[in-house]
Length: 309
Image 1 (cartoon, helix red, strand yellow):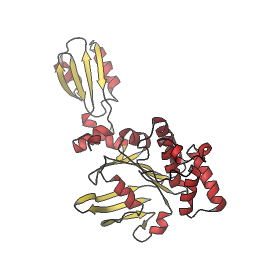
Image 2: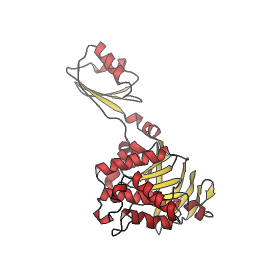
Image 3: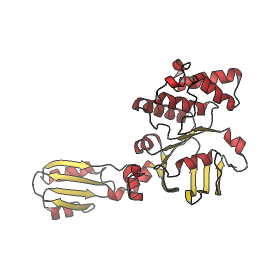
């Protein structure tokens, strides 16, 4: 469906994209995760044909965007970071304006505007001017404007920035619904929890490069060696005995009552570890463990927190 092959884009000395290669299948809800300045918006604008690139190529349905821009534009809906709406116009008037740009007209345009307003939950407020809308409601109309022409591919560039939790959850539900209808969605974000909730496959970007990509499970495997469980006992324990009993794990003694278990699938094996410890007649006071997440992975790959920039 979408393929980037060795795509580069420079702004003078700034390398916004560096030999990026990526393939996104039809019907995927694909995440681009990275801090501000990572290259996410540049990639979105390249795919949408807004931005010429210096090297490489981009293919949509096996068509190069270099030679098929008009045809490809009709297949893509863009949801930009910035609110691209007119405050003095009503929601319906805003959508009508954008629908005409997409060459919709007459009854088809009216029906499409009403259907999209219902989809984003704002049909009852369709005649209110945008200046009366909350930030979250404006975001929902912003999304609606990019869906008017019923695109096959939807590019969403941080669509929840600055919205309240209720609007964010509504937007999430809407995105998931769109994906169930067969839409291919690329979703950019710098929020770990959004990528983890919405996207089955994720590419992590930093300084114009894709530094890791795959399913959440595949990405988390990069952290397996760092998965660990800390167990605190009520009494002292024999560390050497533990090393013999749990030889398949890496053990670290913190003090006379605390031990750390590390290893592949360590959390999945927690119940087995507890059962063996009970058979050793050692009483557990506390167990602390942390499952792998994308924030830890980004920290491991880059050496800094995602929101450092």
